[in-house]
Image (cartoon, rainbow, N blue to C red; front, side, top):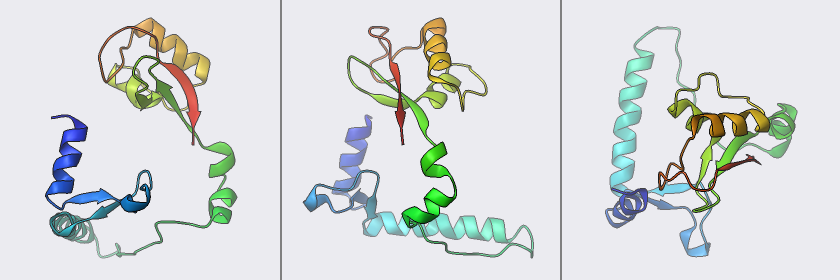
Length: 144
């Protein structure tokens, strides 16, 4: 089943849907529907039960999920952190470069430079993950 079909099923069944969908959505943010929230809570309960049961020194916290830009800047993430992505020139599918390389047997792919990623893609003849063809070579680009 394709990801699009699965997501359409999730929307129809009230599992989840894009946040602020009626206003164009917010990429990467989703709202849980009634059945999705029930599943999420069961997974959370199992996770909490497992990890808090490992030691009396473990405590449950509920930190903020969105942070002010000043916090992210102070941690160095804005200036120093960016994953490399590869974008297929034919179908425009974007993938994280390190994950794609590791799927094809490259170890320690995280942190490679653009030139190293390009060389490994060519050396291993890694196809586009979507259409599996070896047509136009994916090209690395910085994403944040």
